[in-house]
Image 1: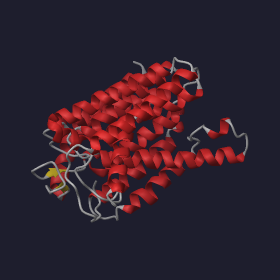
Image 2 (image 1 turned 120 degrees about the vertical axis):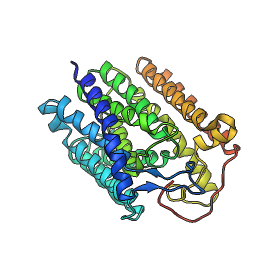
Image 3 (image 1 turned 180 degrees about the vertical axis):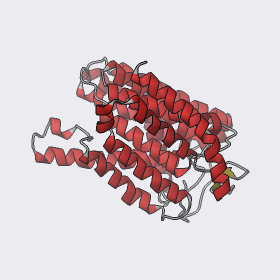
Image 4 (image 1 turned 135 degrees about the horizontal axis):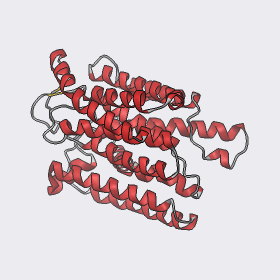
Length: 350
């Protein structure tokens, strides 16, 4: 059995099965997300679902990766474990929320750098130590940004897990087409873990993944973006591919950042029902419709990423311009959509 298929099956089955005892554990220790004016659920929902996904992915790495691949993934596993642990502690209310953004995520990015996983953008043009330093800074920015974007994406049943699963499909496809076995297998493991959990998390959700799960998925998505190499494509297409595959969460973060900043709010510390899915639901799509629409958007941007890997740089530049225009127009239109405005009070969940 190919390593990618084996990783998917192991992670899928483990996540699906582990969610049941994890849910019971969350209820026993009182780790539940209570209803509130900034929440979309009406009953207390257990947290800790991310623990089941974590277990599924780690079991897949243990049994589907060969010895060399496991050794190469040690930095990834360490960073993912760190952000997941910090997220779970935050879910329990034992940490200040800023520790996640300003300490845990940058340290996890540093672990990736130390293990040799980093962006390769500036080094292609600046053949010096300065090029590496710029790429290191870009790596930290990318890891923190994507991890945080998934943290705030977990605001509606099935949204975060489904978006991550959709992105994993296209990471796995592109990696497979470019002969990257480790990336293909890791993406398949994430796909299995997220899909297995989605069985219990899609509306009406029986369990939430919590910040631990959302940060875990976000870190792995950022890592897949850094590890993906399109060696037979032009540089622009190679850089655009991760941005497009993660287009849903990047767009949502952009919308929230612009919208909250315009209202004098801190984007990552001020919770509210002003995300893309909230606005689509308020336009009459409903919660399920909004989530499914974002799944479809993720499939579209992922398909474009694959298409761009076969086109010349000029066509990729044209596609990039269209993508930027789409983001600008989308943000402008959704800013006019109804949403529940929030006050200036900071909180831990967004």
